[in-house]
Image 1: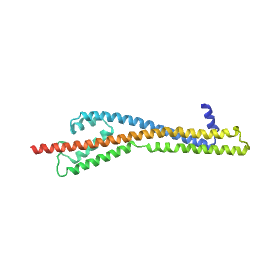
Image 2 (image 1 turned 180 degrees about the horizontal axis):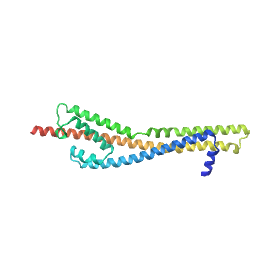
Image 3 (image 1 turned 120 degrees about the horizontal axis):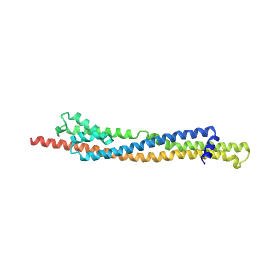
Image 4 (image 1 turned 180 degrees about the vertical axis):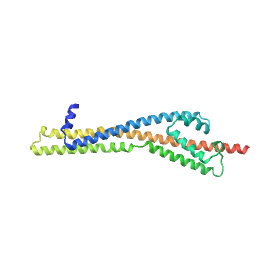
Length: 234
């Protein structure tokens, strides 16, 4: 079977060989992206689970900053780091001095915008190269179809030259056409399936990051209220 496929390739015309070479390059590129993204999402999932475990054990923002960020580099940890950096910039006296005042609403809005920007940046980072995967999945069948049409045209031209439509005349062109169709589908199907799976993972990650950013803002608001109450008592 393998030798027959190789023989078909070697006996194919120049255009068919170019089509098959193009599909081969596309297949290698798509599988490289698939494996890279699969490993990346696997690592990110493990880091986020570990981060959430550490985060759930932290008692306050200070504890989170000291213990959690030093042991994780996943998207959730990076999001929290960005948020804490903005908090430090807005409250140079430290998180222990957070208090609700006339500008607290503006400060909270600034933190929310910063976190939202960090979420969008992370999602854009995770979506890298997926457009190539989508392009390969969408165009590979058409590239194969082009090779198919060209092979059928060659078969009809051969019929015209031979003046006969027997199987010996038609078979080479039809075989060349079908191998291009099969190659296009072989490249497109894994790329399309992987793209849809990765998009679903990114959507779930987007929701997770949005929920976590809201939780960070809530923690800051609670810290402000607590500090205001303590200052009022004193």
